[in-house]
Image (cartoon, rainbow, N blue to C red; front, side, top):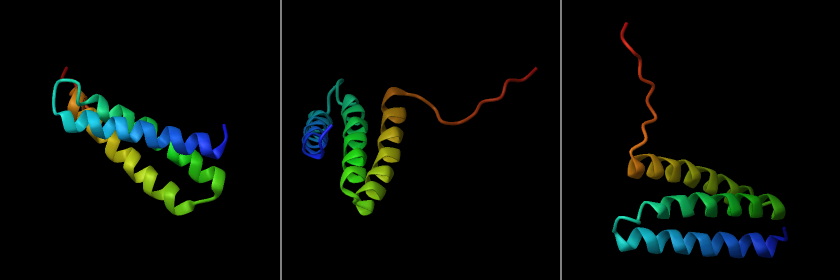
Length: 84
């Protein structure tokens, strides 16, 4: 995929993600999913053009997007132990 395509897909998916979050309705959590998709496109674009700052920022944003998905959809990142 060309860098221009990666850039536009990252832009579009990021805008869709922000619009979904701004709506603040039952579908808003999907905004975090679109942010994850956007992060992947931006990281790929960063590698394609050699922009380490962009890659670093998007990797951190990827983590915050994962946290948003987990919180919104009720997933937990903690390990649970079972009692015998």
